[in-house]
Structures are given as structure tokens and as C-alpha cells.
Image 1 (cartoon, rainbow, N blue to C red):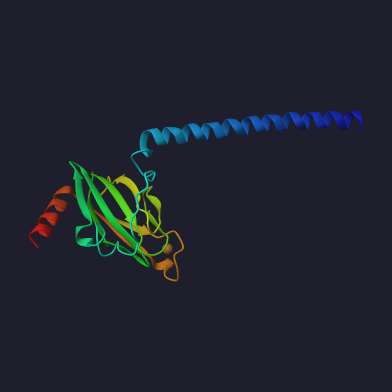
Image 2: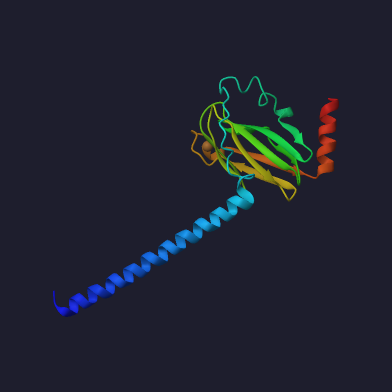
Length: 184
Ligand SMILES: [Cu+2]
């Protein structure tokens, strides 16, 4: 190696060290931002609940909270509702899932057949649905309207047309709707 080559090699190594330092600093910044998001929104949000909740995919359509799509959305607190959603080949039940605006919605999603995705378009709700397991995520809709549910996990020949809907209505409309359901 000539002196010139040695000198160039040294410069290269210095730049490389600077790049590694910069890349590490960026990664640490990302981790800090992720931690911030988790602390502020994640633990009671769209991060799937960690506890294992098992269900029998063979009977989930016939017994338990997923059996009757008419009664899939139940009030579980002063401003909290649990929506039991079934993701199956190739659709979602109930369809639409009707929930009130401004309330915390705990989605409990499961599958009677194969793996599906549960992605609510326009939101951060994006969870895998495994048969035998209950995927639990929380979301509060701030705007009324129709949200599309997209299956984003390949599940068979009908995957590309597997959609559902969440209809977010004003609390008064929701009360009127559920009131009517009670009478029927
Ligand atoms: Cu699919």
C-alpha cells in the first residue's frame, strides 16, 4: 500500500464511523418516538391485547358472543362497547358493524376458518385474525360515517373481494337503533 492509499483508507474509515454513528442515532430516535406513541396511544389502542383468549373455531358461529350478529355490539362501560366481529371466508359479520361515535370500541375479532386480516381503512386498526384466537384492539372513532374493512391477509380464492364495513353513527342514533333492537 502506498502512503496515498493508506491515507484514503483512513479517510474512508472515518466516514464509515460517522455514518454508523448517525445511523445508530436515527435508530435510537425512532425507538424513542415508538416508545412515546406506545405510552400515549398504544397500550389502550390498536396494539393487540397481549393476553391469550382462546375460542373454538368450530363452534364460534353457533354459540357464544359471535353467534348472533344482531347482538354483536354490547355495552361494557359508560362510554365503552365491545364489538364481536367474525372474519370468515369471505366476509365479516356483522356487516356493517354499527358503533357510536366518540365511544371506546373494543373490537374482539376471531375466525371460524383460516387466518384473515382486519384492517379498518382510514384508521390504525390493522390486526391479524387467527382461528382459535381472539384479536382484541381498541379504537375511538372521532368522525361518523362508513369505514371499509379490508382483509389484508391472503385467505383463499375470494381474498381480493373480502370486505366489510363499520358504520359509525351519532350516539343518539345509536341509542335509537339499539332501543329498536330491544323491542324486536
Ligand atoms: Cu383475505
